[in-house]
Image 1 (cartoon, rainbow, N blue to C red):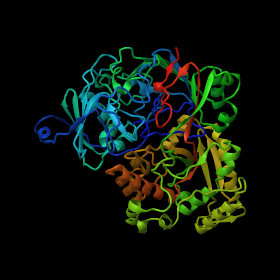
Image 2: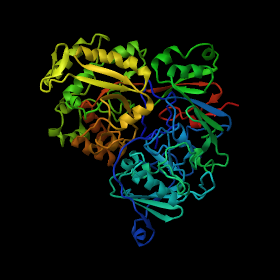
Image 3: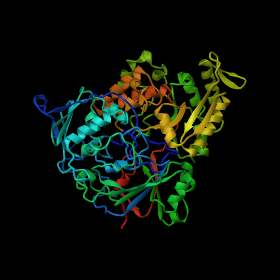
Image 4: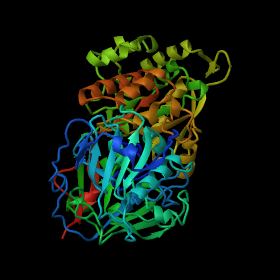
Length: 625
C-alpha cells in the first residue's frame, strides 16, 4: 500500500508543497530478477490446498472491519460530490504520465486513474480489503493467494478487468527492464501467476515464509493489457494512459498543470472501501518552481490546500486577516505512525565514508539544538530511531526476544549494541559544540585522519577530507550551511551543490553522490520494503533505495526475520533489533521529525472529523455547500 512504502520527502523542505500519499504516489527504485510463468488451470491447480475466502485480511490478527462493513471510519459516506480541489506542487514539473518506468518524471496525482486489487485501511497497522478483487483467498500458511476479481470492474473504455490484465501488469512490472526496479524486489518471492478463469488469478510463492506477500500483492495497480498491445509499456511520454480508477486525465499543460476529472460512471463508486472518497469533480495540480512563490499563491487563493514542511513559514507566514477571519484554516493534525528516518545520508561506496568511526564523527558535528532554536522555532524533536514515534523503536538495552536474536550475531556486531543505549549526540548549549567536536576529532584521529595546515588529511593516502552535499531544494541550504561550518572546524571541506529535480533524481538513481538529505519512510508494519532499503543485494542495483550502499550480512538476516515474523509481538522485537543495528553503524546523521501534520486550507473545503493514522487523506474531503 502506498502508506506502507512511502518515499517521504524532507520533512523540513520537500520538493513538493503538497506531500500526500493518497494524491501522488512516488514510485522508486530497486532490482531482483523474478521468473514468472503463466499456466492454465488444470491438474496442478486441483492439487493445491483450498484456502479461506474473505473480504479482507490483516497482516497479524483479524481485520478491524467485518464482511458487511459500509465504510471506513475516517470517511463520510454522506459527503457531497462536486466542486474542485486545487493543489500546489513545488518542483520542475513533469514530462511523463507513466509512473511505472525509470524514465522521466511522472505527473503528480497520476495514481488517481488506477485501481488496485485491494485497498488499505488508514486506521489500521496493515490491513487490506477488496477493491478490484471482490474476495481474497489464501491458505493458513500464506503460500499462495487468489484474487477473485469483481465482475463489474471495468476500464474507462468499458473493457472488463480480467485475470489476464493482472498477469500482464505483474509481468511488465517485474520483468521489463525499463520498469521501476522497486517492483522486482517487492514481489520477488512470487514463483508463478496462474489465471484460473477470467475473474480469478492466483499467485504461487517460492516459500511460505513471506507472510505479508499476499497483502502487498493487493497493492498492484492493474493496467489494461489491450491498451498496451498497441503501444509500448515502457514509453515515458504524455500520452494519457487508460485506467479503471475514480479519475481520468481531463487536460494538461505540459510544465505547468494537470487536471483530473471524476469518472461519472466509475464502476467502484459503491464499494465500501470507496464510500466517502473521491468527492471532487476535478482535481488540479499547479506547478511552482519556488517555495515562497507557491506559499504566496496559496494565500492569494490560487490553490486550496497546503501541507507545510517549513517550520519558518509555519511560524511566520500563516497569519493575517484571512486567517483571523477564518477564510483560511490552519491545523496541526496528529500522526500516529513511525516518523521514519530523515538524515544526512552517507554513500558508503565512497572510500572516505567506509569507516564507521568517520561516520560517527561527522554526526557529532551536527548541532540540532542550534538549528531547532534558530531555524525551526523549537517545533521539532530529534529523531533517535528509524521507527521513532512508535513501539517499533529500539530503546534502552536489548532484552528478551530482541536480545536472543542479537546474541546470535554478537561476534559480528559493535560491542556497544549490548552494553550501551544508543543516543544521538546532544548539545546542551546550542551554538557551543566544542565538546562534540573534540570527540569527533578523536574518532577521526583513530580512523587515520589528521590535521595538516588546517585541513584534515588521510595519513596513508595523503588525500584531504573533501566531499559534496547534493541538494534539490534551495531552502535547505540554510540548514546545511551551518553544518558545513562545523565540519570545517574539524578540517573537513564539505561543499554544497544544488541541482534541478531531474538531474537530482538521475544522480541519486546512479548513486552519483557523496551525501544527500533523504527520508526513509516507515510504517507500523515493516516488511518487504526493508529488503530494498538495506539488503546487500541492493548495494549495486542502480535505482535501488539502498542509497547508503549497505553490505552487512547481519542486517541481511535481520531483514529476513522481520519479513517472516509470525505475529505482532515478534515483529516488534525483530524490528527493534534491526533498528538497533542500523543505528550503531551510523549510516546516517539523524535529523528531526514532528508527530503531527501542518496543514492549511481554504474554508471552501470540509473534512471528516476523524483522520487516518498518518494525517489527512484529501480524498475523503469535500467542497462545502
